[in-house]
Image 1: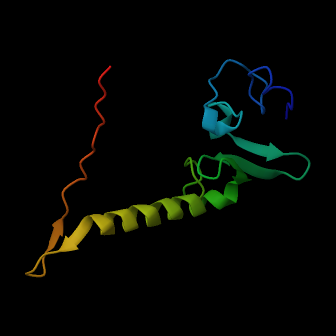
Image 2: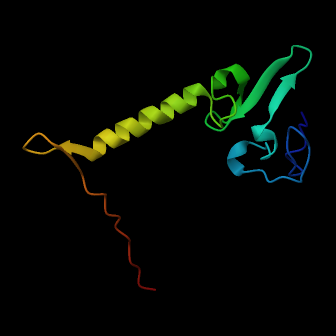
Image 3: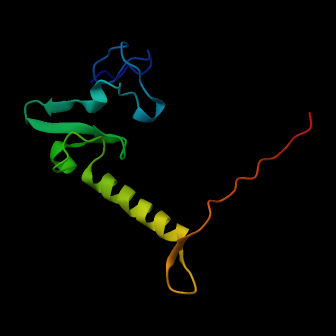
Length: 112
């Protein structure tokens, strides 16, 4: 860990400026956020979760160990998707499911 790396715009894990660091990654570069890290001397394996925005134990990623989100975040995302999809569906009078039309976005017009 390199505590002053963030100040210089480098990755907090590898202290390198070669790879880009997304703002939402809390100072962890794109190369380090896909790597599996081994903590010495315990040997615990950790990986960056893009959902939690934190390092989690690699086992928390479950069977999809190389995915970008841990199981908890993937389940939360699936739940949000299902509830959003349910909101967009409605029952018609004959009992069939129908999709609601997409919401129209109103844009403000300004006269400059």
